[in-house]
Every structure is written in structure tokens, then in C-alpha cells.
Image (cartoon, rainbow, N blue to C red; front, side, top):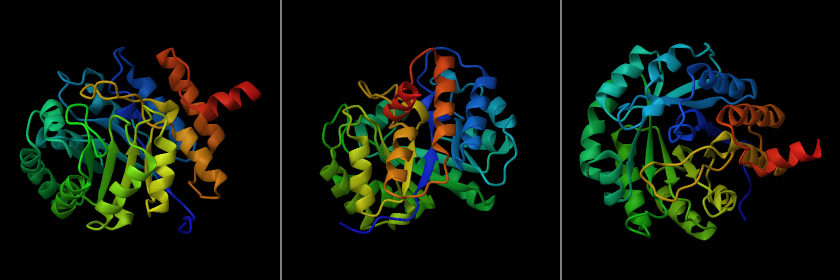
Length: 301
């Protein structure tokens, strides 16, 4: 077993990936409060919204309003999803300093999700990456369905590596590897990560695991042992994907932070304040917190 890292970077995705699939309209003030609660907990990287078509993702129709209400904080990176130039330009107008683009390791999922092939998605991203470079804006790249697809089943890790390498070569400084439907298991996750790491430095790779089958924490640990140092997570386990039938929420940030702190790995995050952030947004949504750690702490208090 390789030595464990001293620290791990957590990328909090609940304001965008966590909320995008919610059917009820969530007020801008509640979204901004979630972001502020996360900042208070010490979260330094927050994906705050997505500049996407409100026709396809109504929950994110208020992206500009949310972005413009963000509290200035030099210690926090606010990022946003921008799938096309229109979204990128809107993000720039709103003062966003880091953006993300996304594609998939599955052709079928890509067609269902963004209505184009994988190769066509690269063509769409090219002008974004060009403009971002000129404006000194960092771009993150998401790759969906790295361990399985709801339409194609198992995905070859070599395909994941090839798509990831292309995004990295185009200028994405960080590549997030997403188990969109949460079907991965530890050895599969580890082997996939190792395959991608043959082409991209591990310090530029993030893991983004949904917890459909309760395997996310185990998969994360397996990838940490392989060199992963960046983890995407969503407070209260919020999340899902409208184009991935059966996908449950992301792994909860509370559970990830509890595990890492228990292994003496630093995150810079206050777990108690993080739990409060999850409880607050869960109250807004009218549901219980999807985090074993948060619920255990509540029942013992």
C-alpha cells in the first residue's frame, strides 16, 4: 500500500451538480446561502452554477444572478459549467474566474446528454479553451461514464484515457473522472485511474463518484492509493443526472471529509460546519440529509 498524502483537495459540486436535477425551483438566496455556508466551513473550490440552456436545465436559469451575488473571497475558487461559447461569455460577464467543460467516454451518453458525438464536443470546446487562454481563465474538463454507461454498459478504460488525454492536450488543467451512474467497484476504479494516469499527471486528475451502489468511498480510497489527490463531492449527497437513468446522488462531502480526517489527511474543512451546510440546504429541499456521518452526528447529539 502506497503512502497516503498529507492533504487532499476537495471540489464541492453541490450548488451546480447537486441542485441541477431538482424539480422544485430553488431561490437564488438559498443557493447563495449554500455557497456561503460552504465557504464558512472552509471549502476552497466550489462549482457554483452552470451557464446552460434554461430549456434543458431550468434549475440553472438563474446562473448570472447567482454568480453576481457571490461574496468576494480571494481564498475561494468559484467555478461554473460552460458547455458552449454562449455560456462561456455569460460566465465572463458575471465575473467567473474558472470554468468547466464536459464530455463523456460513451458515445451514446454524449448524444443523449449534449446531442453530439465525442469528437464534435471537442470541436465545441476548442473556441472556449482558446478564449480562456487569452483571458487567463482556467478550464476544468469533466469526463462522464468512466466506469459504466446506462446505454452501453462497461466502458473500456483505454477510451477513458484517450478522451481525458485529448481534453488535457486542449488545455484543461484538471480532468475530473466521473462514475456518472455509480456502478464502479474499487479495483475497477483503481485500474481505470491507473490507465488514465499513464497519460496525464495524477496531480491533474480528480475523481467524481456517485454512490448508487454504496461504493463511492471505497472507490475513492482505491484511487487515493493509486495517486488521486483531488476529490469531487456534494454536501448532503445531493445530485443526479437527468440523462443517466438510475443515477443517485454524488458521494456526500461530509462522508468523504470524515474518512479523510480519520486517516490523518488534511482537507482544510471544518466537518461540523460542513454538516450544518448540508442540513440547511436539505431543509430548503424538504428532505433528510443523505450522509451517514451527518445523520450519525445528529442522532448522537
